[in-house]
Image 1 (tube, rainbow, N blue to C red):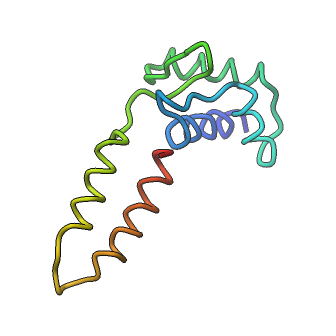
Image 2 (cartoon, rainbow, N blue to C red; image 1 turned 90 degrees about the horizontal axis):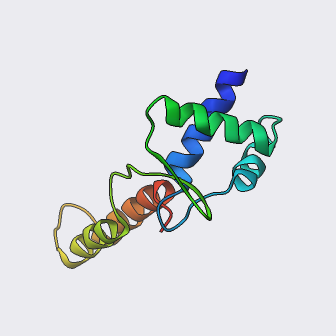
Length: 110
């Protein structure tokens, strides 16, 4: 089950953190507690293990974040604005923007 915890921590860092929104060990612990019993020190050891394995996890004075987001916030906003401004009869651009926004913002907290 320890492997399960490592995967949970990795997924949380990948989907819920970025340079502007680092997460503390306590925040990560609280996100995990309903799925897996752990404490702040256990989260810290697992973050260290992931860093040692080569994952680009950055430690800041306010927490940790994964430094390999596929899109920046600005790029997400650009894509959404571009889709909004385009017109096509093949599909509803407002519906497409809602789908894109939901998908992208779920993985990149913006």
